[in-house]
Length: 258
Image (cartoon, rainbow, N blue to C red; front, side, top):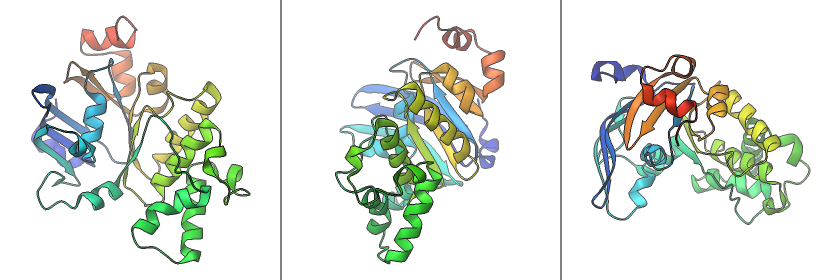
């Protein structure tokens, strides 16, 4: 586990986090450090708490009925659960990409421009630049530059997911959260998203939930293994996958359960 004194070196950090949905204890005493401009994979069997933890990082769990959270989550040393936190600004800094790619029923251009417009940007030239940069950053510009005015619903599944990533990039986040972003995609589309994730860490801090151990090994720099609402082990991915410190980690990575 991570000592409190070491938390300052992380872009984000959870300290003694407890999460309840009503009477159900979902996360138990979670302390996790997330390093800046790196990919951190959250791994573990279904129902272990990794997606619930991910949603804590930009307060998406606030929308769940009966949720109760104790402990702290720090972003650049500031507690995001402080009463003074502007949640809208937090979610601009900490973006989210979901498991199922769901473009808005509007044009490719308007999907990407939606967030900047919500934040008050109206100048067309500035929006044009933001849209192009976001689509380029999501590795989809060349595929959609001639159809920006057409409905995003006509894109393939992989293109829709990369469009959703572009939509997240358009508001210039610092952290990008991804909840199994390739689980609904075919192998070719998954490969493109994996390549994209590896490139994103040059500019962003990325946290990704994945059930695919090969994917976690390919794309992540650090890994956190969750089991039954607790963190069993965390550290450099290569080390955890090669020499796990806890037998349960090794059993899960080798496919003995989960």
